[in-house]
Length: 415
Image 1 (cartoon, rainbow, N blue to C red):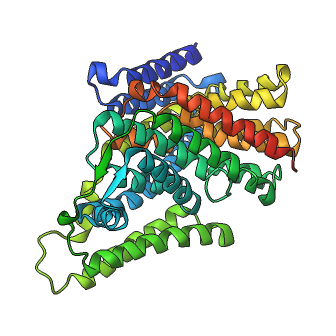
Image 2 (cartoon, rainbow, N blue to C red; image 1 turned 135 degrees about the vertical axis):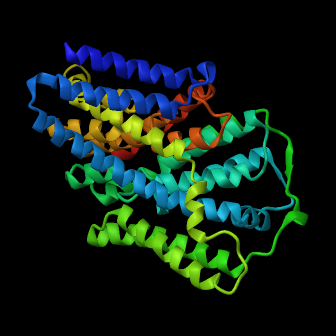
């Protein structure tokens, strides 16, 4: 009896996310409410007759995942909040960009930047930085939605070919299903799909964007130092994660502490009204609370056994078709537990088929705004970007995803 109740509550929660712009109730409030309610019900009436101790263990595991992501986000967003408030990112963009650039050319540049940056950093940081660049241009809301859509897809595509770029890629690699040379074959299909999406989204965008050079401010040494600490933290996160398996969250918190200490030393002689640690208050906590709510809902979904049902697809469809559909499904269900369920099911696939699965789970989440961390971040940062406005881009996204998946299939034949 408890399973249908929890599934109904999860369905209502996702519906409320969809109609947020109609009912004007913040999605962070609704997801947090239903996410916690589902777990409370699981304790009162344990799923599948589990003991409260077992439910507690599962909740602890879910909370650990949430806390790890929450602390990582907090650290990354504090860096970005500081650099944004100081106009550092806008200054860099305006110094690099030409005085005039067409909207179409900018579309391709933004796509390439987000793709490359997500390859050398994590998806969340790449999304925050890419959005900060675009939002500094004060674009029309409809056009901003297109750029944000491209950023989400590009960020998810950029990290799929590296074990440091996407969690599911790392999981599949650690399970010995693919090798690093195999994964590198995904670079070209992923990049092609990004450019295809950029070409489609730029249709009808023929205006030129002018960068006001007069607004440039002098870049302070303190800001440069903190920007360098930020970049160093990103690279240190990659190195320490691969070489010594240090959790990215731990490295980023260390980088944040270094930022606080260095800023304290550099600002000691300056008459500043705002302490460096106060920039934590500028983080949009709606984003963090939304993450908590969504991950609690996904955890509840896992508890009722829905995720394991996805593996039944492989009993009826060839892996190439099943992988394509699983990628689309990962837009509605978190791709990490979905990948874990498939790996535990021990489904037999060739290395080329595992390669298409890697692409599908890494990029398929782009189909819905709530399907990836990049999408959730973008929805929280761009007011015009809602579930329904992003859904209008679904046709373009589906074409780009299909192009990338087809490319991954043919690339897999080279293995």
